[in-house]
Image (cartoon, rainbow, N blue to C red; front, side, top):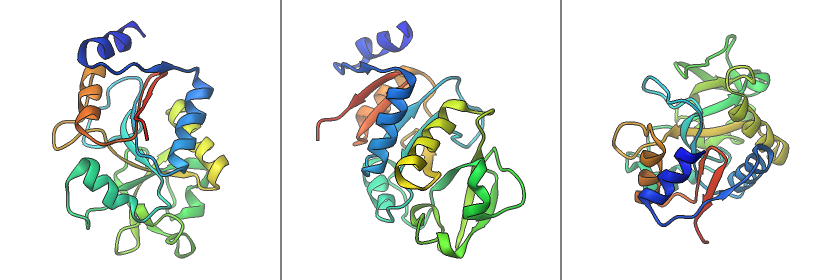
Length: 199
């Protein structure tokens, strides 16, 4: 916690609030359901080319326009390039034609026909998605966030893209704060510390 607080003090004038896990999860899921984009930084740094729920920008997959918003605020990349879904493992068969887990976001699956209009922001033009299945055992905090989002919206899926802006994925709290400040993302969550931009 001191590392996170020191990072805020040394890199910016941002003053975050501290919440317990349930408060933080509930606030983040609520903001996501309202169309806000969240910068999410938790636990150990991830290894590899994918963000798997520890270093991610997150958004509501139900809003097809969110892709354009993300590209304007963060990614600055072509609109045809899809964003990936993180899905609660318990509901993967409800949304995707896939007969195994995909914990490393390295599998492409067909989005079920009756779900394409439900999660358009993570459905590619050919009707597929690069799915990331999330179990409570593998990443409890991230699973809890997706679960709370599902309780609010009825959808157990989040749009997940790597926490970076045309640079390597952020690794430290300082990286995360600096990247957030360069973006127009609505809220930053580092551990239990939360900062929300004024509307």
